[in-house]
Image 1 (tube, rainbow, N blue to C red):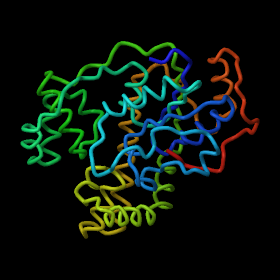
Image 2: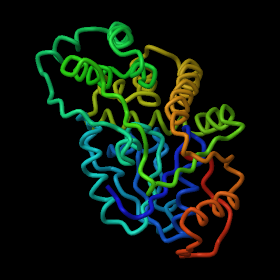
Image 3: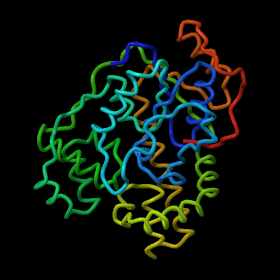
Length: 308
């Protein structure tokens, strides 16, 4: 576990976390460790809202583009890689919307050492999303509240752990004092989500076509969730483009609510609206003991808008 101060920026999708992280990294001399369960995959750029090199503005970013999207990348794998980064960065800034990843790095999550059960997986894979989710709700209602009901891979993994341990382990009682939590909660989140989606819809479809051409199956694309799930349905003729926009917008709204349900359990998070940058900077400086590690003196958010 890291001994130095670590800034953690959380919030729902489209709240502006990436932009804020870059601003604070430049102000205090930090490096960013991504905590996003889909941005770890190579080629999943537009759909996940992955930050571009230009938008990074010279700030080092870690744990982006580290996994093959054809293969499942587990939370256990993420923790091992992220912990190494955490131990070797002078001022780490963890940023993302995957609460399970964040809890793993901040010492909140208990991580079960449960090896894959190929026999059970083969049996469960024959079930539908809704059947698997119903099984999870019955066996562990707490875990079911924070999981995507259509994410077959994650549901099967949860059921695999439950089969071995009886339930997905309950979180520990507290976070380490080394971590400073800042949360972004826009008042106009629904509008942000819709605006960002409308702007990126064409790019998401083009990206999905390219991924398929490069060997990513529609089945795997569906498993990757949200943008890629609905792009796969559109590209296989199961829904129209207007249906894709409507259904995907609703799905992202539901995802944002699940994110907030997860984060609300952490009472150490200090919540701000995205337009309160000066207040956020002041709070971070205070929590760092008044120290400033200023790389640049620019103020306000950069040119990136509606980032993840």
